Image (tube, rainbow, N blue to C red):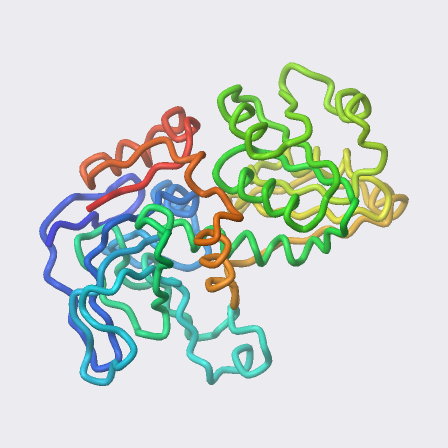
Length: 339
């Protein structure tokens, strides 16, 4: 089968790979769509993502497809079923798993990180990780269930209350999802900070009350003009020290600052503890997607969440390395690989 195999920093090769073995409790999926995630970029650049990657490994953890074959112990799925995958497979027996924190599983299997994933024509996964797509959900939309699931975990931790005010920093796929989720949580006003005009236009269509270019405009002044008198929540979706520091700066008293964007492992930020003290800020971060995949799929299938407007294009495996290498191309929007 044709696959994109990661061999190390800046080294990903499109090559033939042996078909995955299908164990008794496994499902073999013919991959129809696999999203290019910021984590894939971090791995390609030689940085650590949410999990350690030991090359050679087939990357890709946001994927959907058609069931091709099932193991002998699988009874709930059959060939032809349209499905997507939660890539984070927990053991269920370690201390974190037995104490309600399975996303810190000590024996985590990560499809597309610790084991082969979805940038290939086929991928075999444990049946526990498989979810049926709704009748109205396309394969491209189904591949977006994993990032939505991660965003749901983060938005839950923000504790947004109806009538509150939220600011989202970064208008990529994640920022545009967070914008919509903040509105669904009941935020009365949601602002987006994003320098790329095309992304600001998409955000306005998705319900942003104000879209600000942080490189050309005075952010605090524009927020004040738009009626943001008390910013209760700031969700940082860029993963850069400067934007995390900006999030802390614009947060109001008793606000939650969600540091959702993934930074490079060794990056640091400059924090004034007195500012945290004075405003009683809560600094939070969100790690992967515990128990949120089904909620994500339901939001997508019912149309409550738009996961398509931010997709820039779909391409074959041959385009993958160019996308991972080219930050300007990725700035245009979300890319989906269709093996």
